[in-house]
Length: 432
Image 1 (cartoon, rainbow, N blue to C red):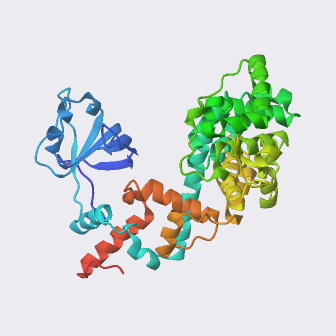
Image 2 (cartoon, helix red, strand yellow; image 1 turned 90 degrees about the horizontal axis):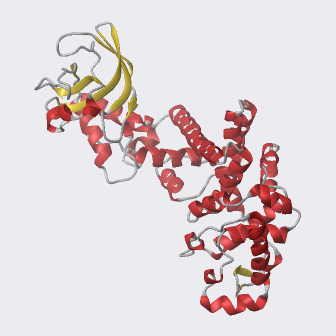
Image 3 (cartoon, rainbow, N blue to C red; image 1 turned 120 degrees about the vertical axis):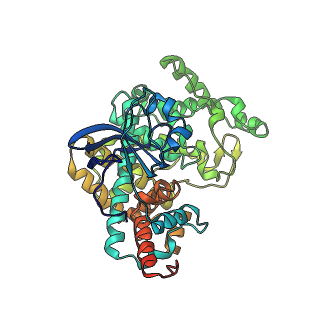
């Protein structure tokens, strides 16, 4: 889309871009660690881009030491020489941006209809869409892998603990994700392991460490009922014994959110389900790695609650009798956001490609997520056939559309390219 001509500095030196570097979205030069060969000499440093070269002074870069490592200044209009804070001149290069490309890029950033490139999507080739979706799917798994790697690192390198924290976080299903992650870090798995054959003691530690066994955490209208039922008092008594035994400190129970939550998602229910999962020895990493099919994954994550919670959503507040198993949609989300990323991350870390391949296969066997993002893309003409597709499109929306990162998006690039062709043919800007 840019003019195909030899690149040269304003004083005639040949320029070859070896590596554009990393795009910086924060304070400082626009691109970090670029590699540029100028007149045969390889330079490694930062690159700054402006509309006019005099903008260098307008933005105060001549007094900012953060710009002392700029190796090339690129501008559409060269109207001034530029100096760094140390007084040294910066090589400059003039780069023309065609009017059509500029106009269509501004359209991408300003169109209210979402996504801005929606008009050309139905005309894109299946090959182009498939290749971009595959890249986005991998990118999303890599992003989740990095989050898992950081959790493992925070758990002193324990992949078992890292898996438990990741699983717990996703039991929060968004609203309570942060609170569940904090809770999981606060659960002493080594100590709990000594009582793994006693579900009541596991639940006591889990509820206690969540700060839910404090009387003030029960709404006042339910406190009397909770105390009369006896289950809360027995759990609290058991927790106080274990708390003293293992020197435990509960988290602040006020971190849990209840507003506009369905009762099925209350932390009491989710923690009770995790306690049963842990008791049945299905929440371990070895059990996950052994899963080769969707049915095995479902069996590994399927759980229920103890009898008390079949008639309660919180302490003292009774409900109709219900087993309170994980729903099919909840299981689907746990497989997509926990089990499969964990397989991929563990495979990457231990160089086991078969686990990475299995993660991709399982993702494409799962049902696609049904949320406002996938419904939006369906409305634009994109097929969402499986969870691999829905994960790719979530990545596209969050990392490209929301951030107006159109220049790195293949659909955005195609929008600019087609706009340029239409301009050259003198056609109107209508891609419908």
